[in-house]
Image (tube, rainbow, N blue to C red; front, side):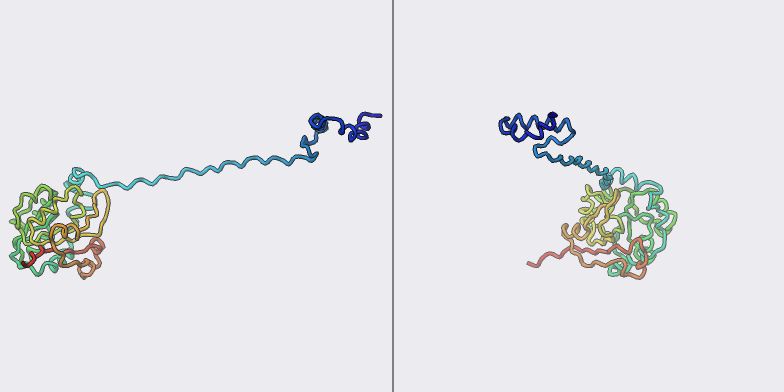
Length: 272
């Protein structure tokens, strides 16, 4: 009898007396030799699936951190340039719509009122006030180039005191209550956050304040000061707040229509 036939005919009798471990080992050797499965069940082993390829997430661009406001020396250097980007002095000699609104905002003041503009630039506002009877006006301006153009453009300001220098340097030299009104137009947002003493000085030298300023804007040359809070915290009372867009002369002036005009006065002492 051939070995294969003998095995087929007698494997069940043989299994009864062969130890299970030896039987399983022999069975695996037979299957390996014949190319079959080595599993104990005699069935072919299922194919092993390859592990999934790892998901590679492409690197995402990192957003640049917002740039903070420049240091105060860099700011002052910018404003002293002959033609600072976006603030060239010659661009502010006209038209006069903004100055017209300024005049309306202070029409309660007598023409002999003492008025100071902090950041007067080329002098258009001051010249407009002089043209309408206000003879006691002064200005503070950091740019020598703007002041030079002021003298060339507005002969009516030939006798007007223009204090050349930064607000930080000039305002402390002025006497208490020197002015009936101190006003700014697009200047407070350029005051460095380390220079809040400027606001103390404005309150010290001015009996009232008019701040024509935009809502909080932030850039490397702008800081979002809270104008009402600045002066209320220093004892002034907000008496009016008007959007510049509400005036016909500036309604279509995109450069200033989003600004508001805040008028402050010293709070009256409480009655005793």
